Length: 316
Ligand SMILES: [Mg+2]
Image (cartoon, rainbow, N blue to C red; front, side, top):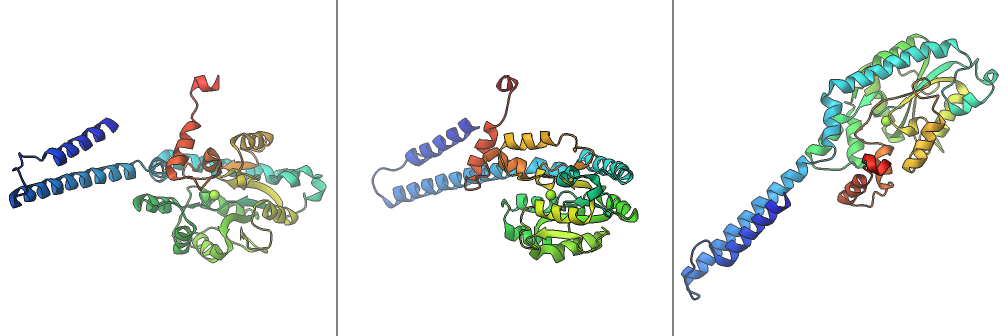
């Protein structure tokens, strides 16, 4: 591909240097006009080449496949429905076992401290119960990157669709007398829009006393852990559900190695007390690939990511 562009550039330079036809000698008006025409043609050619490069770069947007998979692959729906089907099975098991807790700190305490609390399930919102892939599609179409302003504007539109399987699961849990709690890193200023979106879709939102725990809603509620502790003070936490390590344990924004160690430490929780949803579009997993250094240019972020690839020989 590079050679093709170099060859094109060379042709353009030759055109500029030599002209496309034999120029008249001297500085006659005719000669000057022909040189001007030649330069204009060269400029048009370079402009067209630049447009082709720009189009190609836009088509190679790294979000394209992940967003299309989420939006069009029946396999995505299959995975999320499977996750919620598993969650329903585990919910029944958790209700029957009063020593069961999905909250690691609560689970470490004697069951006598939590077995009589009312049951709750804790779900993340984005890419767990609400599908924001239309926002990602918008970013790709606009050749833009995530920023808090465009994100806030999207959430205020209140038009996210449900993740397949999520609504039926939350309604089932609600009908079984299980408190459904949405614990999200959406900013507190977006809580009303989030509640409206959930309620319009038919998700149960029952405040007893608070079903939607947003980031910064209360002092110290920036991480998710204090909010999980708030839930564990009031309820027996039956399940945690999310698409990001931080929906289960923190800090999630740490090295790949530390993330692996944390995941391994809770090996017995995955697929039983912790149910994970797929998110190939974004998450702590992605930032970890370039050490969360968002000051890097998009190109340097891609270079860092590519350097993380492992062939079999790299692993051996
Ligand atoms: Mg999420």
